[in-house]
Length: 361
Image (tube, rainbow, N blue to C red; front, top):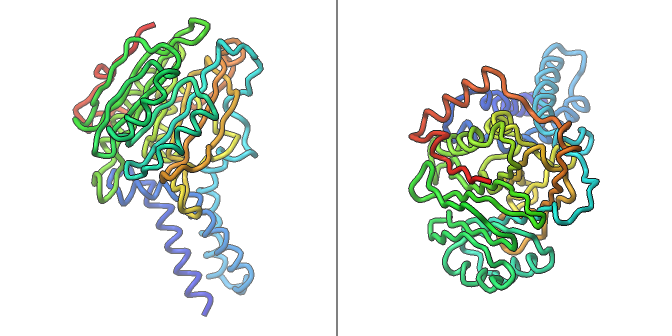
């Protein structure tokens, strides 16, 4: 009785593992990039059950064990970098110069969530230099504006379609632009922020739409927006930060391709997953809210903040400018196949690298 049940589970695990290998952009395929941790956990449980319940001398059992173990190993390959057993991609900060640090809070607020004070309290407690809100509308803006005495530099795009965006900063923002790169109702924000030292950092805040049955049948819009921004920041001498709810998990093929093309680093590598969604469902969480940065920075602090009524946890990251120590940090590198895949994904939408606003230092 155990064998057919376990065999069925192995078939499902194998399908969930093999389907995302396809380059198809349909949501049914690409959404299987998300639950790699959950698939790995099920595979491990099935492996334990096989070892406990089946006759290990049977040829069929050996085949099931081999398939399960292969699936588990493949899923683990994607998620182990986001655990503490993996080397840090970004060095811990050694510089104590506060004037050269940048403290950033990102929060998808969930438009129907009317606990405005919950987020305001977190901002007052953690005192970021700059914070960005996603899904923020005019109602949310009125509450955020109560912080304008301290956060006197802002970019505001209140929308009622779940894609509003706001940026508030203590530090000056220069050469700002609100753009609708791929879709005419989904904004992105681009600016140069001036640190207390006078150093300028190029910032890009994104919130592309996900592939899903309620949003887009394909992932092409999301993928193209991420990759044109990646191309626009590649090989810059200027310090760069890209942050936001990318509606893609850290271990997906597209996010990995973004890191390769942009050359930016992920401070979570070797430190943890920092799963930010879904705040209300512990068994189904994955890292959707991201911050990537250039080698100019090392990491002073990273923290997932407490929930405040949204389906996302906020993230707090503090970067320390340290070009000398950061220069030896190594991220992912793109090869010819990666460049060709990026070209293919960008070509699927009417957008190009030239469309991305490039704040000038």
